[in-house]
Length: 303
Figure (cartoon, rainbow, N blue to C red):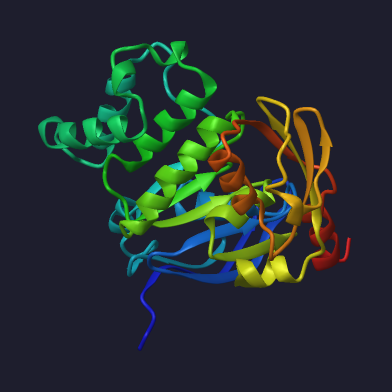
């Protein structure tokens, strides 16, 4: 059976006016319904790829097909199928939450009366309905990030691109956002995620591409990536002292409310989080201790 593709990129090339060669023959496909991670070191080309797919950056050569529509031949149709959540907040700080999302629908030619049910749907789903009349500048960082997601979804795109969506978001909001994205993906929306957090890709994604210096150096299932990597030590900070033995498989090192856990392809961080939550612990923050993703980049790129 032939695969149905949400996105096809073929031989993308981009050189900026200052001479920086951002992309060199980038090629990868994403199947419909996939949750796909695009990973890479800083300045690897991730943002340029996203910019080209969303129509915000002009490529020098190559082809992009979104949902069967060639970006060069049917740009309006291709862009209609894409929603983008950029890294930086880019809405008016004095505008109301509701108006920001409603105005975005207008950019896609959707009349206000038609768009209003979707505005309410996504503001409610993302926990922002009670803040709908608040100026965006009054929102917390996590709420602003969720507002960006609601705005990207208001026209019901079939491909959602998330560029570092949890930057600056505390762990509880991050976990809530994860659950929302999983449900969205289950409904059929294809999602591309760029992130610096390996545990984020591990928790959410099924397939991953590694980009470096404008070239895709690896493209494979996330489980294969994790299996190829060494164990990682992750520090988890809790709301109270850890006194249980529920995480013995992770060889925990306990220091009052902090835990150092050894995670692997068999004993994943996602499973550890679920175990802690079931045991009544709240997670305040998580951070890698051994830099497993950075080590993998070094091995993959030869740097």
